Image (tube, rainbow, N blue to C red; front, side, top):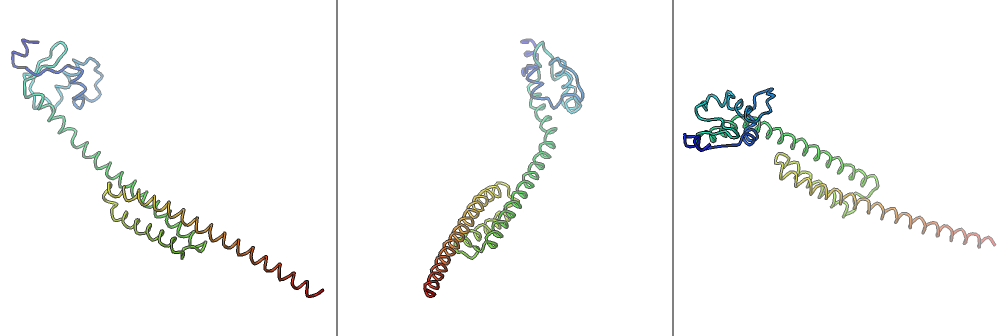
Length: 206
């Protein structure tokens, strides 16, 4: 090994480490399991062979010996090969995130419409604190919609929107309960008045 290094191959990499780091050079369909043989096949990859001649490296017993600039060349070749795939993956991820955010935004819009419909049907949409809560949600929904093409900001806006919609839902439910309770008390009060009126009429006939 020392003689090889002195011969102009100062950079050395164990075969297993080389195979792991530069697996992008693995021949398609290769069934080689021996790390040394696989490393040798990887060094004959077309993209590698056109830039790194066989005279620039030596195969040792357990390590691959290379001239000083070869390791940098291999890293550059690997990065150039992987870059298109990385860019494709990044575009796919951004598109996926956008689709997810769009679905979440639509779900929030549907939830808000359901809450607004319930408030209108139950007759509490004109109550001040209900109206304020729903208007706040509408404003937050509009803001989230404007930020939909900015994933990080849109995600934060949607998180706040979901919290506001949940709070508005609780407010509507509370308003409905109060209204129903008021109607129940009114009905009981009217029933007592009717009962008293009936008693008075009964006394008049005696």
